[in-house]
Image 1: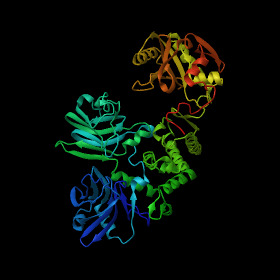
Image 2: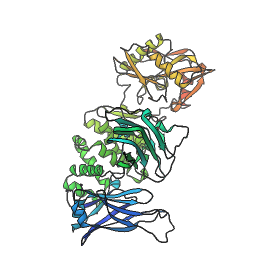
Image 3: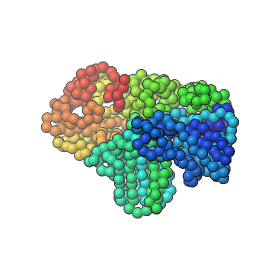
Image 4: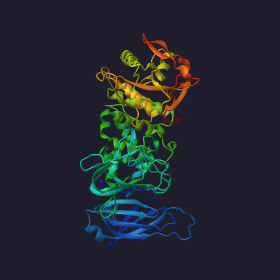
Length: 596
């Protein structure tokens, strides 16, 4: 196992701690024919507490922990020492030595190769303990701006599997789960005989919702779990677990996955807490990209400083843009405080924003599809968003790329609509003409209408064109309206257009239309009448009614030397949609999360 050295840039000389918040190994010493592992841990006195040392799969040492007379449920750190046979460790030098605290749950504290343990115990050098979660507060991160799933290789015939959040007072809260068989094909929910869970936030939502792509949310509880059993033993290649696409993705930090084998045993196949190989890879990447002097400069006393590591990473990338290629996306994701339990004001925010900008730059050099919401903890204010955008554009400029802007939809090219308005206008006119032929009375609306009325141009910080189409049917449900809108767009010439839902689940009923000749994407929103109201998406994508008189008939406006249809009462429409202050520009209007 790669370990860290305070003395040099080799792979020896430090203990790597996996779960410092529960406990840690502080010292490894040699005592005659025994290796003594000494450390500290916090325990729940209402439960039995035992420290277990294993060499490979063999139990090599056990220490029961008692705190006499303690009236507290959670104790202050309690010291312990566990002796282990030196001969046993020596005979299994290629195996891993692991230390686990068994209290309310099994909490990994430490893992090293037996060979390294002997070297540490025999060394006369002072060693330091490095907590992987202090250096990488988002250790095990998945999801993020590209919704990257956690992929767990199974490659086994199993009866089922179980997901657990191994934390007290926690949620199991995921977006979706894909199960792939040995041929790489998705396993149908019909092949599942049973789904069980520890709890559900909403009892009206079926437990199968996670494997059907509709998400799952447990109650807040200790160690929430979700279990799937197959009708027959099934060859499974891998599981793909998709996290939430907002700041609550941090709820997955304690994820542990077990497979149920043919003997009905649950065998751990993944742990975000104690993924030792992953920890090794992160530390190795760190050491490979720092010189010996840079490595030494990352220490404050005997403690490896996360802040100094970030400063070194950023200094390298600012001085030479090609150095951004040396640091992997996964490394930066886990170095960020996205999943940290600490409040963001406990960090130096400019440093964190700058590091996030490096991540965004790396993930958007070829394609701008990126969700900002998972990083809402860091982008908590208007100032932090502006600063992050600035840093991203510094990286892009150094790489010869066009500047971008952050929007409530994600990331778009700066001045996306205003740099070449003729292309946008011509595509819009073309689509509106074809929609008019279909009898759905298209008109520009929302942000596009706001720019046309207020500024006589596209809004500089806007990133899309919005159209409304009128469905002739009345008193529709949301699902029916979406279906009718899709049927309408299917009548467009497929050689000129293609379209798709903006929301795969149908939560929102707008449709994206791509004009094939220009690549311009337009947002088409259906509306319909119900009584004396026109029903449509309004604030925060909520569907509600506005007075029908606003939409009955059409007005016209001159826009980039072209005439466009607009609602019959455009100012009333804008006040309904944006409020009384619609004439004041606000780049952060209806941002996806609350900003300071």
